Amino acid sequence: MEPFNNPIIPGFYPDPSICRVNEDYYLVTSTFEYFPGVPIFHSTDLVNWRQIGHVLDRPEQLNLDGTPNSRGIYAPTIRYNNGLFYMITTFVESQHGARRNFFVTAKDPAGPWSDPVWIKGAPGIDPSLFFDDDGRVYYTGNRVPPTGQTHAKHMEIWLQEIDPITGCLLGEPTGIWDGALKIAHAQEAPHLYKKDGYYYLFIAEGGTGFTHAVTVARSREIAGPYEANRRNPVLTHRHLGQDYPITNVGHADIVQTQDDEWWLVCLGSRPYGGMYRNMGRETFLAPMRWEDDWPVVCPETGKIEVEMPGPSLPRQKVEPLPVRDDFNARKLGFQWNMIRTPRTPFYSLEARKGYLQLNVRPETLADQANPSFIGRRQQHRSFTVRAFMEFDPKQSGEAAGLALFYSQKNHYRFELIRSGQLFIRLVKVEDGVETVAGKSTAPIPATAIEWQVAADLQELSFSYRVPGGKWRMVANKQDSRLLSTDRAGGFVGTYIGMFATSNGQNSTTTAAFDWFEYKGEST
Image 1 (cartoon, one colour):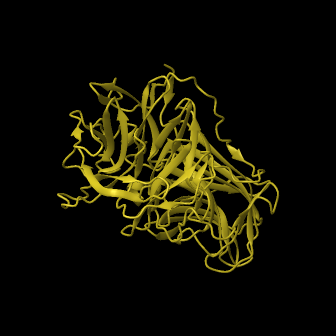
Image 2: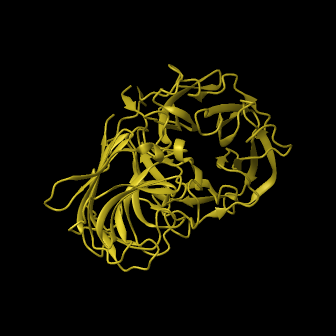
Image 3: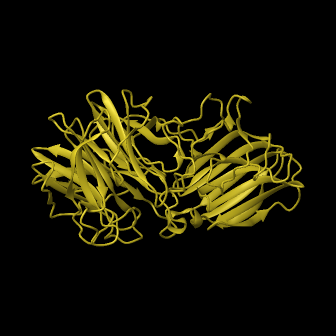
């Protein structure tokens, strides 16, 4: 079988869920506080994926106003039944606030998708739908056990019939399993399947960090009792050293190909420069087969590897994302995202042809708001980003440039700012504390700037030049580790993009970006 490389979707694309319709495969991932929400990908070979849209691409579908970092949309599941696609997910309002579950539907996976159908009386996170062969539909999720938790973050998987049109839960909920690893925590991400007379329940255990794992149980009856697989966990890297290139694998979904092969998608991370995961949790692919009516994942080695033998499906050709976006299209490409839901238009591709124009607004990257920011995911450990910007700020405090963003409290801003005169500076924000890590030695004589940010693993360098000028270094050997979940907390990954702000003032100024270039390096 032709080999392939993991991850199959690099960068911050966690919690993958997959379904097959004839010879076509569709995959969705979590997006947390970013808009549009829930990217959807298509493939015919499970290895090469092309994004075809976002499931939640309208403000009326996704209200992220005031949503904290690493909250919002958690763990979508995609399923297909009788001509209709379903995407079900959790909206997490805040760290301790409500977890509200809903689903949307579409006849075409590229959209449009319906407005949300909210499910009342459904506690917990990571919901899934299961369509049984008798026509009944079931909801699965996690919850605090009715008898109480025996240890921290101890959760139970529960099941209840649901009306797939109204979202009303039917009958009574049934607790069906609380995991195989009795001292583990965070039993979540239930996915239910039926094969050869058994109902198989896959879940995630151990949290989404280094001890993440996939376990499985089965039952002849959908409501149980469920029997745990004696080989559990069926997938984990918790037993491997921290220098193994892939860590924290888990949160799995499985699919059977038209060639009767079985494959598993899951999340995992590629730490570098130590146990630092700047790219967040990514999407990986692993082989699976059945032995004695139980699944065996990665049967040859027991672990997910960077290079593995691939599916027998004919390989499709998918054009990679262009290195450079010249902003000549009428719409932004699917790789671009915003922070939270935009309530007023703050960017334009029409105001100045061939440019992405950002309005300079009061919101900043440190605010729990929707700033003027357009970004894309970091997908390589080493990379170079360049962009060309025209910006003539009128008021003191107006700034625009490039940002490496993990959260409100952890990011870098490489900006042209008016402070009497024009200066370029690098602002480092860690744990909410801002420091100027570098600054141009003299006022900038031009309002057109070419930016460059280069990452050599965990070292960042920031330089610029004016038209016809030489490159000038503003800061070198800056620590990129502050952009990792391991230092900043949370569940997301690093974004790289363009921003503009007036730092709290009203403004009519704009910043225009002629092009943006992201080039990843193989390291």
